[in-house]
Length: 622
Image (cartoon, rainbow, N blue to C red; front, side, top):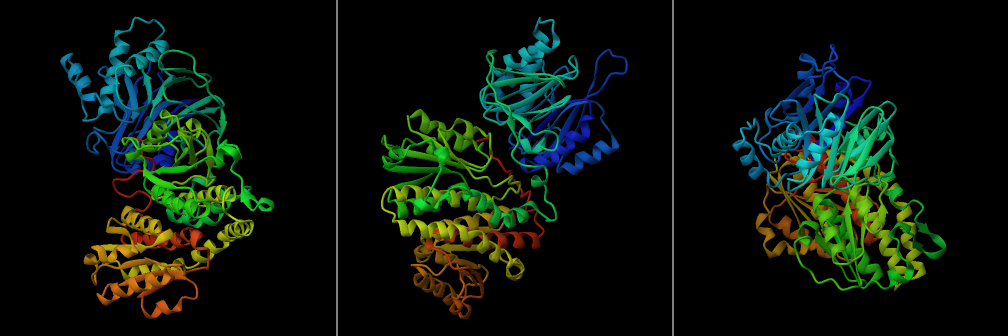
């Protein structure tokens, strides 16, 4: 959460920082700010100019129009509040006690109060409620106490000394008036990437912030410390030793990170799913073996054959995709599989035998709880594989192997295409493992054919967007919704409910449809629509009976079902059709109408679907 971008070069820093913040605003939009190291006309030093505003980025942009800040070196931040409310004072960047050092910070300093008390005893005065300002003061304190003559080295050592005093997570960028054209950054548990341009350098919390300026990036590792000038850089670790690094090429274009002609990123990403699903299986289907290939797993066929149990870890949407994966793997490969919420797995002590294979799922590859779950699994000696979208992310680097989704950037806070891509990839995994065990050639070939047919079928559902919008408009007075599904579409119900509450702020809950009579039916009323996910599958008739129970109590019903199931038009209030598909793959199709339903519902209510309240895209703090 929160977004950082720093710049040093020959261009004016403010426009570059504002552009970067715009691209990062999905990471936090409670407040924003910049600090610019102004160029001194006399050559006797520089001054730091700070501009900060609570609220959306436009507030900061207006302030900078009224009160510009000029210079060729600067840092900036867009905030998702943790410590302290969303106010001008709590916005970043923060200054140290001298006012000569500015810093932006992502993460949480867990021992900030103890450090703050100590600094206040020494006479430090704080102007915010944040833990981040404490870190800025710590660095400034170390800088002032240093006897190092080289001012740039002095700043590097001050950052290093301060970081040894803190507990928690950080991604920081700092600059000092004594060292114009010089930035220092460091990370631990919060992502930070270096951008290498010609005569300019960048530091950002997400490569999307700098993709319009450079495609050469270095993804810093935990405990890396970097310093930058417009022409040079060096990476060490926090202990002072040299650090290894690799220059990567950014794998998407600036245009892919823009909305284009769509009114919202979320709608754009919903409509990108025919392509993103195809990208997830492109080059991975092996017809002559009726199987799939996932070379990034780094496991031999014999090692895969020896797997006795699989654990899938994720948070939010990723956990729902993992639940579909559990059904798929157990059905096709007959391997016991379970889903663990990553935040629970890291603190539990579940018994895992030596033949257990762990997967962690994360769109960003930086989700803090999923990272911790991965490291916990590795700590216990298990092979942990990652399923991620962001190339170069921490999970991609630290896992023992895995697979990329290749979905392209997902900017909308409410995940859409990453869900269908994760389910697609888990389907490939289930086919691969199944063909090693009980899945026949004919069954494997049929699954490959069904996968190839998915993009066109998704496109057919997307063509119903206006029909789904009209349905959404009928229920704008609803204060809550129930989402009900069974078997493979129980996780779809959970995901549909999550989408609705994330972006519309109404009560929404997903349930296994058969659980209705075990308490949930008490919520059924004329004011509470029920959304049934009920394709023509093995439990279709059971779902029809459950739907009838809701209608008997005057509950409105929206049914998502397979083309040809016209009998539902006599029972349900509204029907959305999906093309025929294998029961196992139905979640990939049935979730699309739910994404569109929540989108159109929320837009009609006037909600900002790309920046829902209290949410940010990548959860990098506990």
